[in-house]
Structure formats: structure tokens, C-alpha cells
Image (cartoon, rainbow, N blue to C red; front, side, top):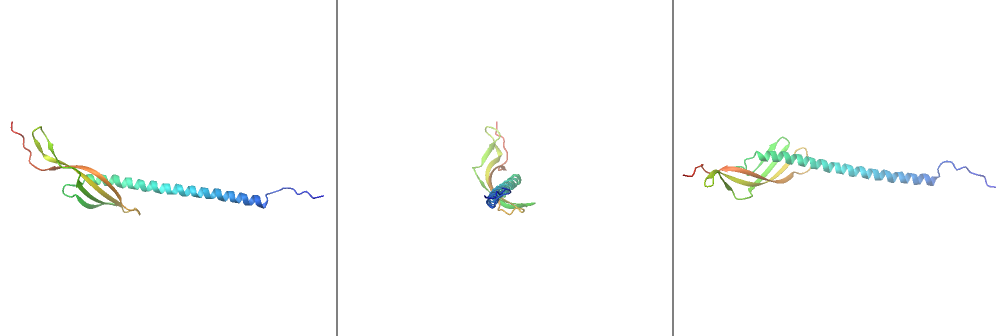
Length: 144
């Protein structure tokens, strides 16, 4: 007769299979965490670019594009570089059907590059359209 062995514990094969399953699950979790971290970095870079663009647009609104169509400016951490060109022919403003006012409206296309000193990435570049008025002549009323 054969002696009966009691089946207690795990066999070596069962322990190896369990270890492999746990290792594969751990690798899947690590890959998932890396993807989450990569996504978080992209979201942060997009947030920084949007912040810089918003502040750069506020600065561009204050620029005198008529006399300074091109230039650079440092505002705190932001380094702003712009180049403006006329996007359309200047239009005289009419104050009356027959009277031309002293102002011309000009539409500029402004290419802006902004760099934040705290970034390790390159500058953000975007294009904006800006409307400016320029006094070109004295105002005269038509004779009645």
C-alpha cells in the first residue's frame, strides 16, 4: 500500500504561476501610471501655453503697432517678441455720409512669440488680429 500524503500548501508550480501573474499585473499598473503621468505633463504644458498666450494677448493690446510694428519686451517672467503687418488696406472712418473723419482704421496681423523663463520647453507662437486707429488728417465738416 502507498502511504497517503496530505495536500497542504502550494506546490512549486502553483507558486511560480502566482508570481508570474502578480508580476504581469504589476507591470500593467506601472504602464498605466506612466501613461497618467505623461498625460498630466501634456495637460500642464497646455495650461502653461494658454496662460502665456492670454497674458501675451493682454500685452499686445497695449502695444502701439502703428509706430512699433516689430519689437521685443520683457514683462516679469515673460519675454514677448512680435511682428505686425497690415492684413488689409487702411479704411477711412466716415463720420457723416459726405464727411471723412480724421482717423484711418488699420487691421494688423500680429505674429507673437512668448517665452516664459520658468519653462524648459520652447516659446509659444500664435497669430492675432488687432485693429488700430491712426489720425491721418484734420477733421473738416462739409459745407452746407
